[in-house]
Length: 389
Image 1 (cartoon, rainbow, N blue to C red):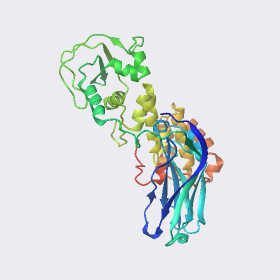
Image 2: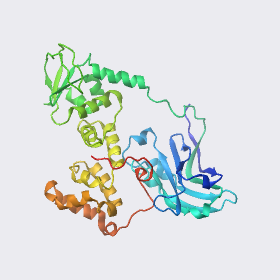
Image 3: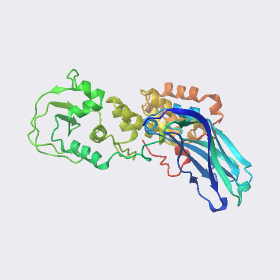
Image 4: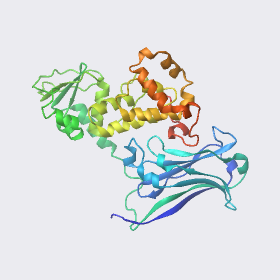
């Protein structure tokens, strides 16, 4: 049953802590919603890591399915107009509050708030309420009739499609990826990628229409080719590692991707971003961009920026914004100093460095910053920052 919006109202969500002295670690509220697909969560930290004499309070946007796939800001959040606060539970007097800039919520800005919402000494032994008031909460004319949380995609169905790729009994495509043979079905690839749809039309030079007998042999980390099979297409892939290409095919078959940003991995977020960009797999490209931008740190942002990403303006913009927001720390790192001292190692170094300095500007050079707004991965525990690309 579909619903229509009957009214938009102001709403408040309150969480009562009876004895603040019993809490020493950060706590999260249960998720709450202002519409059928717009969910939020609060994080209360009794001892702010940056300012130990203060408490911290942040509002998180929990991305829905569409937002999770979007690498940009989330426009539906901008109308929320949120105010977070801490109050005395007895007389409702306010210890501290902060107005959140909801325009900034997006893949890189899932959490916003204040690291100094109020002084800890004010709350000693007290009953408190932390909460948020949000504008534009939607009231609808019908009840919500779907399961919460929604059913996950069945794991056995994912595994079945993965096995379909691995077995290749119905394959009609042979990929030669730097000496590794990988097999797939052209119909599936064409449905999932505009690139492959055009490729298998036969009009591109990368396609060779031929029949080929394949020996019954296998190599580690590749599929086992069926014996004596004839293939409609044989395609050379010289510009990607076979593990990277296989990860792309797994995504096209199962819609699943696992990023591995360890030093020797061939399936890092940057590897996956590059291959998804070439083969026009927009959803995978967006996921990889989000993963890459979420895992930026002051120690790796300069390496990624000067490492050849300038041909992707949207990714470059993400890195430039992070650099500006964290400029005071980035310019003190050994990675930044190494790049600055070795310009010959980096293509178009002078032009990019000039652009960086112009983008940062005098205000950021002097150390100005948006100190109360933070990337989710900068303020949550177990964020996984510091991965290398």
